[in-house]
Amino acid sequence: MKTTIKKISQAVQVVLLAPIKLPGKALHILKYVAVGLGVLDAVLSDRAEDSVAPTAEGKEAGDEAAE
Image 1 (cartoon, one colour):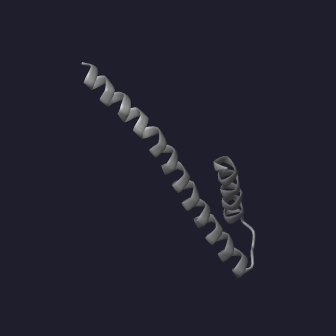
Image 2 (cartoon, rainbow, N blue to C red):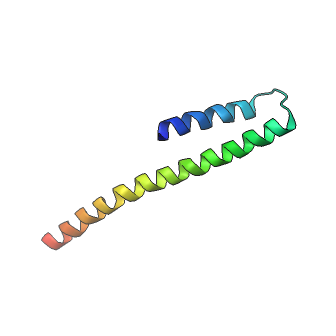
Image 3 (tube, helix red, strand yellow):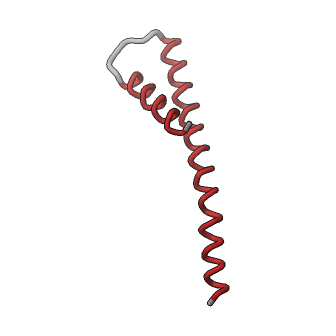
């Protein structure tokens, strides 16, 4: 799911950066979609970091207790 969101986000960014004329409403919709995808990407990456962090801390705490 994360890769799909990243690919769609990149496609929207390419359309926004392309030197083409878009109707005003379409441009605003694309901007909102890009912002929403950015938020989703940030939330998904935070969840991935949170799920990795406790295991790393647990190992460190276990190592300190063993010493």
